[in-house]
Length: 88
Image (cartoon, rainbow, N blue to C red; front, side):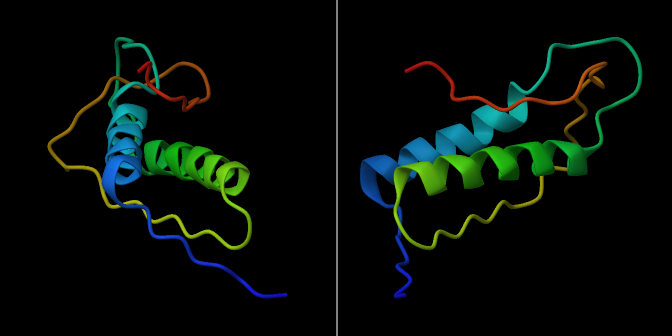
């Protein structure tokens, strides 16, 4: 079975970048208390992006997520994180 690699560019590349940023920033509602661990945010975003890429493209897909800015302090969520596409 031949694997295919897709490079996401142009309009689709911008969409993936917005998705990545939106997923990181909109994963949960603010709650008082400790800051959300960045690794849990990355894991939620990565799982979502892998599922979306597999659904949108046939064959092998590769998803890579960079590290969040260490200065970013998001309030810890009281529920498991969920990633979703931002409207528009």
